Amino acid sequence: MSFKTFSFHPQIQAGINAVGYENPTAIQEQTIPAIMEGSDILGLAQTGTGKTAAFVLPMLERLMSGQRGKLRALIISPTRELAEQTNKAIRELARKTGLRSMSIYGGISQQLQVRGLRGGTEIVVACPGRLMDLMDQKIVSLQNIEVLVLDEADQMFDMGFLPTIKKIVRQIPENRQTLLFSATMPEEIRSLANEFLKNPITVDIEASKPLKTISHAIYPIEQLQKTKMLLALLDKKDDGQVLIFTRTKHRAKKLADQLDKAGNSVTSLQGDLSQIQRDRAMDRFRSGHARIMVATDIAARGIDVSKISKVINYDMPNTADAYTHRIGRTGRMEHTGMALSLVTSEDLPMIRTIERLLGKSLERKELVGFEQYSNELDHASPSPIKKSNNGNRYRKYPANRQQKSFSPAR
Ligand code: AMP
Image (tube, rainbow, N blue to C red; front, side):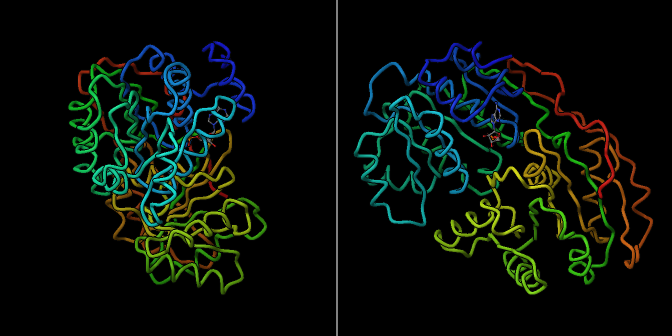
C-alpha cells in the first residue's frame, strides 16, 4: 500500500515525500482512513510503530480547509521530550502547508510560548501542567479546538496528570474529534476513554507485545556485580547506541559517572536536570556524540533515536508495561534491537509477569567470569494473559508485530 491511496492534499503529500516515508506502517494503514472519516479513535500502540504520523497526517488534512490563525488542534503529551518530538514531526510533515505548530511545556519561560499563541498558531503540542497554567491566565483558549489527541495516555496517568487532563478536556467543545493513544490499557484509561470518546474505533496493534525485531535476554547477577557485568556487556566494537535504565535518578547519575570513568562516551537523562541540560543530553545522544545514555523511566519517555541497538535494564522496571515501554526504544521501524536485563533474585516475580505478557520465556544468559546465583529462574512457566476490550466497536488487526521467536543475544 502506498500513501497515495489516502489522496492527501498535495501539500501534505509533499511533506510525506520530503521526510521520505514510502509506505504507511500498520497503525497508519488502519487509523488514517477512520480518522479521515471523522471517527474517534482508541489506539493501542507503542512508540516506534509510526503512531505520530498516524494522527498528524489526517489532522493536517482536516486543517487544510477552514480558518487559519485560530488554535484548532491540540495534542497533549506526557513529557517535554515527546512534545518537542511531536512538534518537530508536525513541522516536517506540514512544511508545505503553511499550517503552524508550536509546543508548550513548563521548565522554561512562558514568554515565547505566549508570543507564539498570540501569533495565531493552528496546532499546539502541550504538556498538561503549563497548558492549564496558560488557560488559567486566559492566554490560551480552547474554544475552537476541532481535534484533540491524548498521546501516551497511560504514561500521563502514571505521572498523575489525569485530573489536570480532565479539567482541560472539559473546556474543549464537545463536537470535536478525539484520538487517544496508549501503549497499555489500564482501567483508568478505559474509563477516561469512556468519558471523553464518542463511539470510538479501537485499533489494537498488539500494543503490549514488544516489537518483533527485538531479542530479549536476561543475565542473573548479584546486585553488587551489576556494574562490572554491564561494563563487560558494553562491547566497544559495537557501533550502535545503548540506552540503559536505572530505577532512580541518583543511580542514573552515579552509573553514568562510572561508565564515563571507564572510558565510555556517555550522557544521562534524569529528573534533576534543567531544561537546557536535558536538551543538551538529548542532542549529544541523538547526534551520536554520546554512544550511551543512562536514564530513568520518566526521563526517557519519547526518546526516539533510531540507532538504539540495545536497551539494557540495569535495574528491572516495576511493571511489565514499563518493560514494554523501555524496550520499545530499540528495534524501531526496520532496525533490530536487543533488550538485556540484569536480574537479581528479587526480580524473579517481575520476570515471570513479563514472560506471561510475552507468552514466552526470556532467554537466560551467562557471561564468563560471572557466577549465576540460582537456576530457579529456569523454572518460570509462562502462560499467556488474555486481554479483554470494553465493548466499543473493535477492530483487531493481524499480529504483524507479534513476537514469534527469540533470537539469542550476542
Ligand atoms: P513514532 O512511533 O511515531 O514515534 O515513529 C517512529 C519512527 O518511525 C519515527 O522516526 C518516524 O519518523 C518513523 N516513521 C513513521 N512513519 C513512517 C513510515 N510510514 N515510513 C518510514 N518511517 C516512518
